[in-house]
Amino acid sequence: MKLKDFAQHIGLSPTTVSRALSGYPEVSEATRTRVAQEAARLGYRPNINAVRLATGRAGAIGVVMTKAGDYQFSEFMSGMAERLSGEDIDILITPMAEHDARDEQQLYRRLVESRRVDGVVIHSPRPDDPRIALLNQLKLPFVVHGRSATDVPHAWLDIDNEGAIRRSTEHLLDLGHRRIALLNGRAGLTFTTHRLAGFKAALAERGVEFDPKLVTHGNFTDEIGFRFARSALEQRPRPTAFVAGSMMTALGVYRAARSMNLVVGRDISVIAHDDVFPYLTAENMAPSLSTTRSSIRSAGTRIADLLLQMLSGRPATDIAELWPVELILRESSRPVPKDAEE
Image (tube, rainbow, N blue to C red; front, side, top):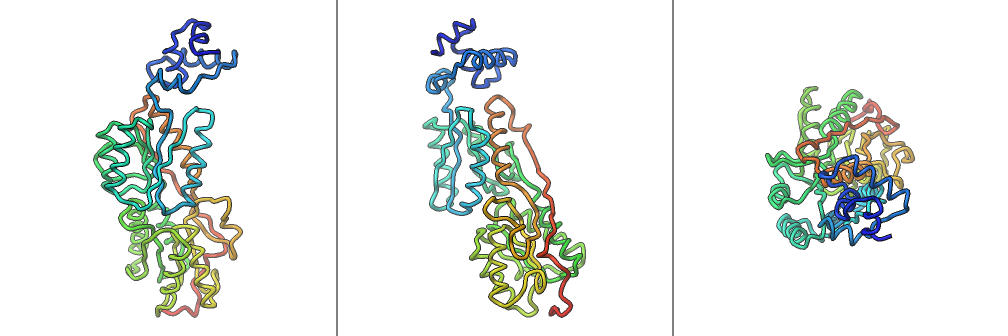
């Protein structure tokens, strides 16, 4: 059945039917419901190209993929795909070999000019992110995975990064640890700024002096975790605990400990931020890993949903979600060893 025939059959114009099926806000809820019910009853499925012509929409959401954090990106995209399945909306992934702010801004300009996407998702925002100002100026709907301190209004979804690292550090302090190392993400990003603030706040509350030599910034990789942990453990006095920014850097800390004949959970303690990966679980590590838990897949699902809401007319200023993070204690965090060097 063609769009024209279906519209005539239910007594509406083809444009109204197309807009109802696409969720346009100017179509009443009653009309949208009626059209959806009739489409299901008659087995009508719109021709996606015809719908795009009628509505002026591209039928796609854009996402820029950088080289760093590929394992996290795949989980996020899986969450988006779960939400968008059945919506007749594609995901346009544009890879970038190197993260360059000017190149990425030019990329967004091209997407707008080509009208290939209806909205985009911004990852790894900075406190004053120029991409937010640009997209606001270009009037392209977007949702930020994270958030920015910019005055430009923007829709965002973030986790409580400051609270997560603060709680992890407080737990280690409760266990008697005083030399605690932090493996943070890339410097200058909003979430790494928040995590460092949480780390410093926990130390300051207990009167523990902050030592910048016990903090590193970088991509979340096993190799970076290994190199920093190995170097830190060769210091005297060495750290007795590590707060790892991801599961991958925690793997590096575990490997560094083994290389020095140290036992995690006995000689050193480790807590990591866990993004709930199906192929890497904290429970199955030896020893099991204490974590602050959040699901990046769930974030992908929710951000796709929020972007759909924006495309249906929800204002960006109405969207600001801060998700709490749960602290889960396992075998890798234990009281400071009695013979620890202080």
